[in-house]
Length: 381
Length: 259
Image 1 (cartoon, rainbow over the protein chains, first blue to last red):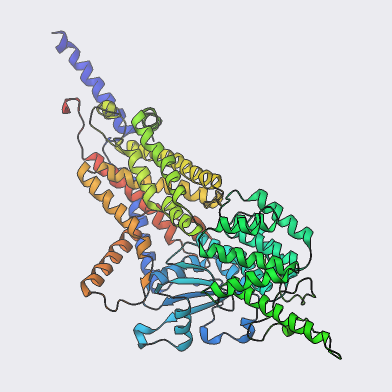
Image 2: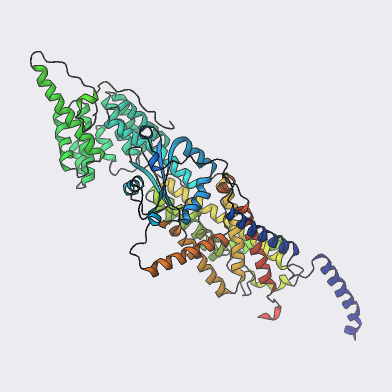
């Protein structure tokens, strides 16, 4: 009875609640109109834009000044700029994606145009059956197997960095910046071989500062930098670099023992013990210790160590082999000059790098000798 | 959005020991493992792509959304779901609340993930490989929003279908880097192998264009060929996922008598 009495107001209440709910919420399971309409609208716009951009892609406001392999001139080879190669093919879909994303980034475009010589190498094997000789030569040089492949190299073809496949703009910028930093290390090595130790120290110090001494090549750079200082008879500079290296590097595996040896903390025998049977480590130990001996005028010891490197190295393009060969040639030349100067009416020897080293070996380090003029500046010091 | 659902979702996730352990593994364990194997710059970059790429973002979103969307079992929000829908809360409000809660959680976990990876790299004397700047933070927030929206839909599917879809997406995200280049020659390859490769490329490209909702804001805004298409794609993907999530949830019945 009570139930039936209360049923009328309850029904009325339910109707009121239901009406107010409907007014403020509508059905709780209904899909909101704004969501439906905005989604449909954006999907239609998206489809329209996709079609329109596939027919007529957006125009670039600024473009990379691409060169082709056939248009590289000798002056490009002599320039300070690094070469940026992009290997691609017309049929390669990821290459098109790279072109429309990372290679269209304003920062990447600006950086490439300012600091690099950008060279686009388009493979035509699939279309024409073969590539032009210049294209094929570059693909063989950098062992390109897939597209897109990006390579940063010194003008002489020494590869510094490479990147396979599509990368985003931030990633590509990072690859390019690292290559730019790394180029200081490679330039420094070349300067050391080419008897430009002052310039070499600048390159190595630029590399060390840019990487905050925190790069796997930093221990090598510190060793070479110290040796370049020694070559100029700047013992203070060498000591400063070696002491900083000793306190900075926490990893005491090879080549760290070379640093302690050059700083006079361990003997050469102890260094060889640290190198163990690893041939690469032994080659480095003999070569770098030999360079230090040469710089300090210990010709007999230098000859012994550098000869060991020359006869035991299988890679004639390695830095250790090249520096050993150059210094041995110089030692030989000096001995010859000494004999000549002992003879009556002999002419004074000309110790300029170009004259001391045999033509096929390039100039060598001059211990505390005159330095050749500056030809380049370390990048981003 | 319903603040109650939003806060309850976060509370449920961060108060359950098992889910906290799972999330901590993704946030701290995975980057420590990755950092310990990143012996050189190249490996580190590859691993960073994994950390920054869609796979980990999806894994975190998926884990975070676990038992979170319309869970009818007697655990987590399953206990209150029937009661919840007896109230004047629309399904779309519920979906949007879950999406925002998921995005918040994913952002926190991804942030922890990157901080742990960077700290581990620094402690090992290596350079940090993920720079935390305006662009990376923006991407982190935007991708947390978009991947959470995707996971809202996947978690709204019946369980087996949801798992199947998730596995396909993980496959596509993992195979993506392998398909980011084309071999210069397929000479000597078995034609069937080449055809399979082409099919994989097609599927992966389709998924990347139409399903993966990530965005690279730096690339989109700093391009010399500006287009609104990536922005439209990003927003339309999120709206589409929220719409699908609402539709899927609206078709389900909830009542006290269900159990």
